[in-house]
Length: 185
Image 1 (cartoon, rainbow, N blue to C red):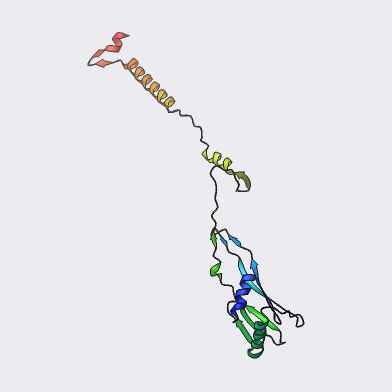
Image 2: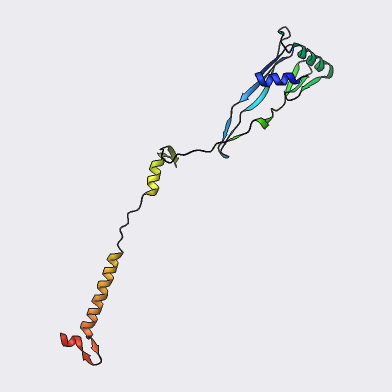
């Protein structure tokens, strides 16, 4: 029978129980979980506020409220499944211990950051703020190193030819006993 209270509470976010008080569903905002790249769903808590005895308006829950109050007076507590437990403290005041709202209906959502390749966006590099365009240019900048291998090849070639010419000018070119280069010079 008390399930009507739970249904009304979760649909309307508030349920006035004449002679007892008011139950309300409070929403805690969604949170971001950067480490796991997701957004955590909002959390819900049930709040109870007592009502003054003289301020008991009549509504659709008046009869159920009276039955609930009688059960609290007779048994010391009354449980509403999915909502919580009403009980009396030492001074006779009605207290409420809420149940945790079932988190099975509030799943986290994956939220991966989307970075468009052709769109400029700000980013933090060290302690400087820059853009992705500047950083892309920085990392793709080619070091202009002139290709100078051919200079070394020419130098070595000239040194080699000079060594050969020096050798032949000093010793001449001989086949057997004849000096060909010496005869030419």
